[in-house]
Length: 159
Picture 1 (cartoon, rainbow, N blue to C red):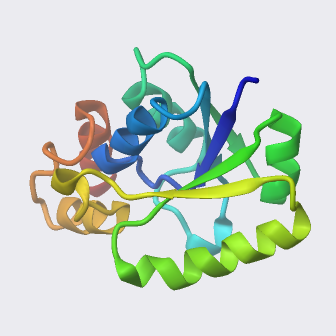
Picture 2 (cartoon, rainbow, N blue to C red):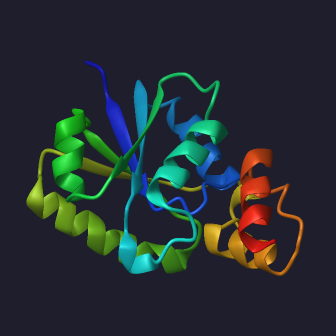
């Protein structure tokens, strides 16, 4: 049986921590669908189509990965994509409470779909899209945390 995992997030922008998680998840799953959420509540820096394109660039050359955008209920998307697993990343204990609540709600809505939590590699654990944007907004070098094309896109946004 082919097992597909859907990895949802805002990915504003996708970081090396996110791509590390995708690569490691491919050791466990036959396919990973990286699903970029529209999520207008967060007021993303990049538009949805930009975030999808940047994620495709960051994951180019990685086989068994698809990148899509979405704006509907996550469970509906998981079912539509034929995935059996929702993949979520946990960087710190502070992430756990919120993620645990989401997993419980998703389990209630779709008991047939499992949520799997993975921690990023040690060298990527401190990276968050919010921190990357903050460093970039202040003129800092983010090239160690994101794909070069994303670093350039951030520089373009912040001047």
